[in-house]
Length: 200
Ligand SMILES: [Zn+2]
Image (cartoon, rainbow, N blue to C red; front, side, top):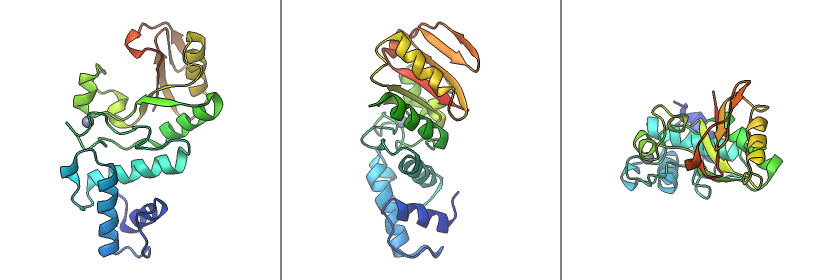
């Protein structure tokens, strides 16, 4: 977990903390924990103002998107788990730094990007038909669309570009997949025109 000083620094970056970076958990620090939770947790019973493992995951997720995904917004782009508080607080895993960096690069190359799915808790992943152990449950996968994703050639280009970025692992869409240097065809009609990309 982050040290208190690290938490205060990140909370300050995000506008939640106005006090000194002193490593002491005082009133302002506690208030910042709670306001962060209030703003992002999709299950309100999790808002307790206590900084534990879950709040650490939340803070790192929100901060990573703030720091590395300037065209993205955790809430506006619904990067949280879309079970909407039914099975989790919305943040079952930390949004990986390289995932959001790569997604931002895709955005800069291809234009307006909409995320169809990022974080998923295990239950929501199963309901969505995701494979067990899916990287969506680990904060390392994203399904998204760009202005060129309407055609197979466009989706291939998005996937191949992903493999020029940081720590690419796997990419697929309806019609194509790539894993390392290996490519092939894939039937994934449930994906529509979305593309799945993940990082190691
Ligand atoms: Zn969930």
